[in-house]
Image (tube, rainbow, N blue to C red; front, side):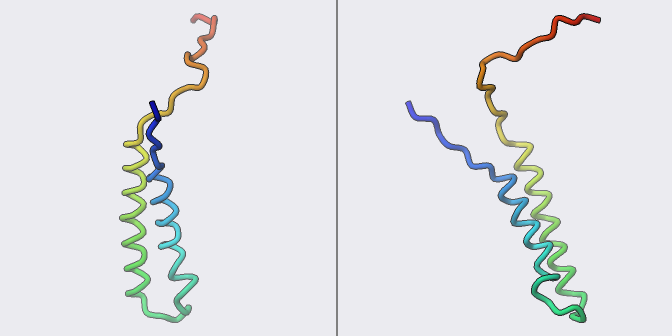
Length: 75
């Protein structure tokens, strides 16, 4: 039985969000109007919130060794 590969959409969307945040600095001139820059900030913010939500919804990874070791220390 093959395991289904799950894509990490949270980090992918976070990278896209970072690119959208950086776009006004890289593409627009320094003395450009504020309106387009605010649009990039708004879109980047929505993408960042989506990235956080997608990261939180990802299933937990399985441990490679099977069980979690416990300490012998007791309070």
